[in-house]
Image (cartoon, rainbow, N blue to C red):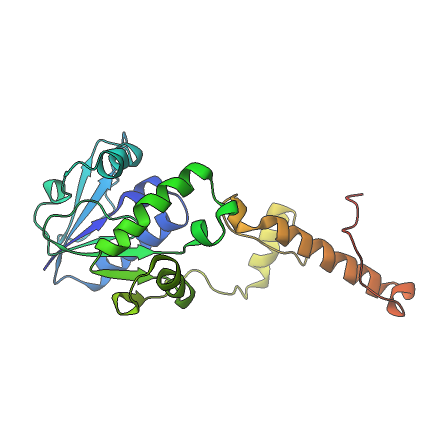
Length: 249
């Protein structure tokens, strides 16, 4: 079987879906030597680096940016089949919400969330307009829709009218290096390197409104206030509730 995968996010994005795509392809390269894979990328001026894939993996790329290709495919609706670049494939998988024009292959598209519909105030206006246009079209064209969670599947059914039988929930994996660190010397070295206190809250994510770092900061302020109040002699007998965050001073 010959399988095409849109590798664009892996080339163009450092985190999020870029990491998801890189790790997906890395795992497939380690596990599957029985099928042929063609990785497609709209890499713009970047030539994707050779990642040392096995012989059954090939990279095919075009010197257009993902934005330019999106205009050709989804605004102008030009029938530039992805197979013109990948060659014939049996299955084509897009791990980033949107399917390109596909001529004959069976198709899969991964939808990570529908926050741009569920919480439109938390999405960039231009990106929201684009996704509102192309994601519904993509999920209804796809033979199979992959969802990161049951919540995303429920949203696909409720908000976009996708039939439940066409959706498969596949939870993203966790790379082996993400695990609790027990080496106290290493932990102390990292604390000193970044001037960290013994206890802290770490928030990971891009700086986008939907990541809700404002709420995380407010929760941290509430927790800090509660701990300080409870640890004081006056606070142990009184309430730890307050109506506003403490001042930065």
